[in-house]
Amino acid sequence: MKILYLYQHFVLPEKSGITRTFEFARRLVAMGHEIHLIASDEDLNSRHSKPYIQIVNGIHIHLLPIPYHNSMGFFKRVMAFMKYICGAIRCGVHLDFDLVYASSPPLTATLSAIFLARKKKVPLVLEVRDLWPDLPIAFGVLRDPFSIILTKAIERLAYHSSAHVIALSPGIKRAITARGVKSENISFIPNSSDIESFRLGKDRKPSLPKGIDKEDLIVLYTGTLGIANGVSYICSLAKETIHSHPHIKFVVLGDGKEKGLILNLAAQYQVLGNNLFLLDPISKNEIPIFYRRASLILNTLINKKELWNASPNKFFDALAAGRPIAINFRGWLADLILENQIGLVLDPLDYKKAALQIVEALSLPLWVENRGRRALKLGASHFDRDLLAEQLNEILIKVGGGVGSNRNTLVGKNRG
Image 1 (cartoon, rainbow, N blue to C red):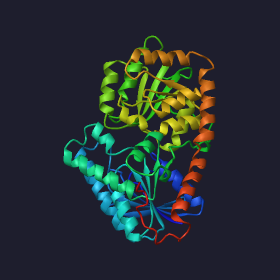
Image 2: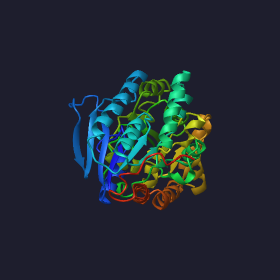
Image 3: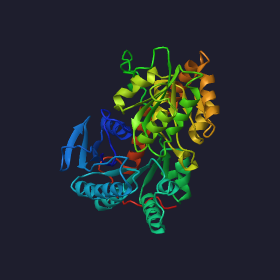
Image 4: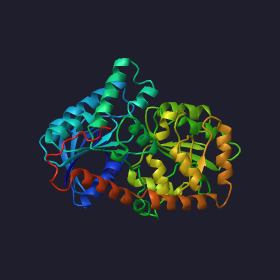
């Protein structure tokens, strides 16, 4: 089957970022599909001024030169989203495909998907990573009534124009069902664990900064340093442990809008370079090396209930690496941690209590080993990328009706 895959923020494993799209796309190619993926070349220093094509692992990647970074202001971000809509449509109308598979957010990308699916008279499968516009509204990014009404209308149009919806968490699935989409037309396929990739290069050691000794215990955070991520929480944990437990070192690998704030706060607390180290982002290929050296993988979010439906990559990477996990929020991931005894659910507001939770856990000789073993078992049994790719493949074949057999299938099957 020929599949048009739309995801604006696509990256390859050689770069820092979310590689779910690449990992699923290359597996779909291996299963016999032809994949044409339309994405943005978001490199601010890109040498390309016109759209161009790369073929990687059999995936035809159509790249649109649209610079983007999460530190951009609201207007520049909106302009990037609008450019992607137009660019994706211009590119997609010249391609032949049997099905459109689109990933949101950004929610605006669904407009390209809806147009192209209707233009070519093929079904649309929509992947929902986060609930938009719920999150922008909760964070005050969308405030005026017109913008809220407009984005909710786009959301409604996207759901009811899709033959099937992929939700990345149980909470997202429940929310979409509440919007009037039939439950049988929604599947739960979360972010997943690349078990095999975390087994490669086991002899390699991470390049750690001066100040971290081989006996030190590392608490590791990798990913975006944005407002929602609340990484300043880690500065407070470091402040609480710097004198009592200096052998526990907090390592943050990432970049984002709040990097400056985190640096200033860490300097103010006198933990920067002592028991907290802020390093630049690394490629996805390098992530397993750092995870293997860590004693605990940390995933933080600010204290907002709207974020509890998240399906963060670092959680599933921890499972693949066989490392215990600590999070500071509730929701389905907290339930997984507690039910499977694979880590800690930290107090989101009481830093002293949260720091004590980490200290007490890491002071037990077999705690890391036992929790890590259970984490790997859970990742292999429920979240292995190969297993979830098979599930996705079955859905796409069912919706698409097989190779070339769905050319007259219209979108809009999801009305309740």
